[in-house]
Length: 321
Ligand code: DGY
Image 1: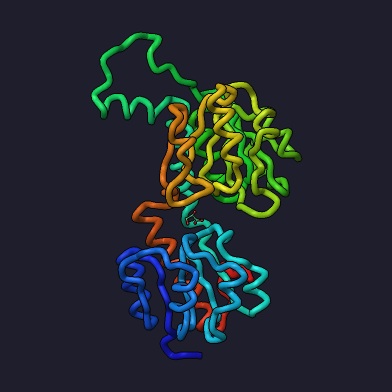
Image 2 (image 1 turned 90 degrees about the vertical axis):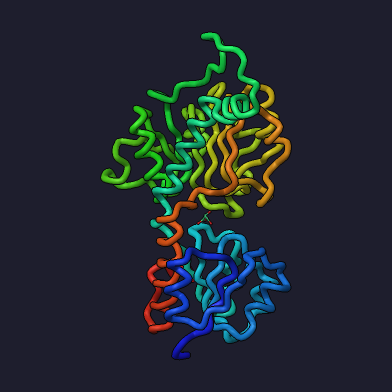
């Protein structure tokens, strides 16, 4: 085991995290914070024992195959790991960890912001005032949907889903959810469990997505499933863009079948979707669910805790493979 392992940090982490990393590791930092191309990523990984990437670094099967034998752990600074081919990592004996829990509050806040921004026409109003186009007021002006007392559907009742449900309860919303397994009473807290996605969708005035992107969940929100939602429902996505067929979503928003959508994640990132951006009834953010000062520190520290455990020959608490 190297006394001071060499650690590649491909993105600009918080100052406190970089300070701690430099204290305990020989850090190679991608100083200008650009996203590595696949070739650059492989080249940067040569000669290091560990890498601490974000969701912006793709470790697909080809990249993992090209990693040096010396690299033994990918300690992600993210809860989502759809950017890492876990089976390929396992096959090469590379440990993979993530950072659950520490970003649940921050991401739930963004989910609620997306819900309210969509329901109360936040983007439309902001742009109107900002661009000097606000020259009229009437009781019939900018009328949105009230969420109080409505049904809040959670698809994927993991840690972020549970915190978001708790926040939605604060708005007097009735929580419904679908999850692979039903939660025990103390976590369910009176939420109504649906054993199928379809059952959940039929009762979701607001549907909030909190499941990981996997081959099973990719495109789970599509023309067929959108048609199951109540008329003029609201879709919130703070999980992964891959969950949504964006063309189907655009069609449902343009026709008014859906009232609005609040989205923090997109199929193409960075950038988003020009078709969605052209619509008034969407509230859009650039994948900032976990972007608070507190949470950035907590994510980095959690990734470093996982590295510390690994290099001390203990099992990292967030070991996935
Ligand atoms: C996560 O942790 O998965 C967030 O999307 C930020 O990367």
